[in-house]
Image (tube, rainbow, N blue to C red):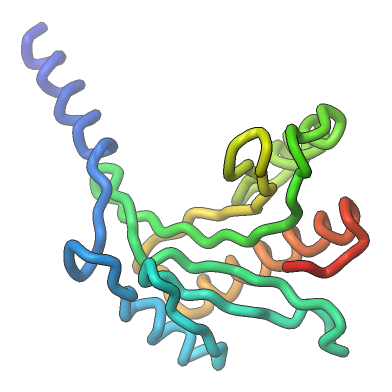
Length: 165
């Protein structure tokens, strides 16, 4: 019985430990930079050491989408996970219950990623985020970026009719 409790404790501890690859301060993860270079995408590094991209959504360049690849990672046991997310729209206060329901239903259909809200009730933003292996290759990063960009932009267009992000 004691060994079962110890095993449960050991299994839970790694899930609570965030990891920052490459140091203790906000530094850009060079794995992302190399992958972006390989797939021909340009980015800027923000004050947190994260990669910010502005991606064309359509061939005409009429719609763009901001997307972030987070340099900081988290560990869950042997998994090292990275987040990619894109802002979609500001809620202008509390999120409308019908919109929230639609987003939860969409989360159920999506196999990679989910909707979430950032901010407090007065200043919330709906964002779409995916979690991928921190060592994902360039093609996997490109695929994850494409999904995040397309989902976030489509919802932005649906909710606002604009292209703010």
